[in-house]
Image (cartoon, rainbow, N blue to C red; front, side):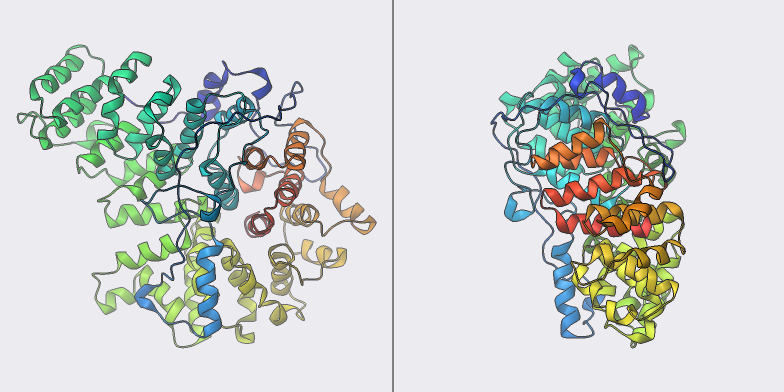
Length: 596
């Protein structure tokens, strides 16, 4: 029987114990590093350099990028031609995954980072980093970059078996909530490359995807390499799906007699047998009151059987996974409207769901509403953000959406939700005070050119809104925004020391805060750090080991935003720039200014 994920600090210590010492990496601290305090290293003192020669192996298949779709409620027309062009560009600017449920190869033309993404890296070291990574990471944009790296069509790096490499990538994607990507990796691996580690991961991936037939080719092998009762349950369910009711009944009875499995889990398995025509009327109604937690097995089998999982149990599972299991829910068919609504914003804030996915899902949820009900619904508010008669009314609707966020995570998701509506909005002095929120919204989805058009509206201002807009565009726009220590100092007075330090770290990483004029501010913010983690990410960036940079950056962000170290953040931004991810570096920097 599969179990729900325990705290990774316990699970992955055990999983990592057998790995090579060069790959043992400590997790990031949970407490925020105060400005001026040097953060602890994420790597041990014994960290060693990675070899330079990769091992060539067949590349797996992965996910395509999001299509250039102009997804808006009720096919709302843009306010002008420029806004229409910006909206179309927005879909391409946010490489945050395909429409939920689609898979395919992630080649360079489709958004992948190319066949050399892990060339030169030590596979054991990178796999060790992935095993110790606690998900979700703080940043939506770091999640997007990591997913693209893990799904890039590329050979395995040196020092790791191709099958085990797929296992580490698929397991990480599963824990990130990227179930389509995880399935794309394992579904396209030739059977002769399957390893014991991969079999264990495959079982969890098929359950999270509610793909029970996918368990059947693995059942015998899984039972041989693992004592997990999942495989005996799989043998019984697969026999039922094949029409062998005698073997199925015998398997379930044996599990029941041996007291190896919770009776509830056997009953769920028998439900599969019943709908397959081999249950003989054995399955009872599913009474969720009999259990107090949801496991991947319970989620996957219930979903495959068409049994609705109560929202409180789904919420409890999401709490245990940091919200990433909402990605499984959104992929699963037949989910109730309230369940999908609960999943949408957490998944968007993490980076699992794109702005197109959000708009489409919210719009679809309102399909059966009459006009009065639609106007009072979230879809009605979003429609007003696109289609209200005036700019002021459209911004008012967006304000309502932003204010609906229950916490920082939810508020950032609300900005993602309005990104395309903000991009369609004409630049208007009448809403200049809302410019920071509009800019943050666009940058959350990577729409930097349209966001930069608001600079002339706020450039002459001398209020907090103008200073906030400057901070976002100083890091988020592709040039054209004057940056100076005086502007930074004025902004720093408006915000917390931590947020100001993150902005300074981003400016430094982007190359905008160099020279003696910045020395005092950087010293006060504690941006100087030299330890094994900073050496590792700097070396990976200098050697253009792009995939390793993505993974190391994620390890530096595996905390709440309030705990992200500005010193680490400066190294992460600089590393992104060094490997050519300038757009991603700017969007990650803007996210820090918005959320930090």
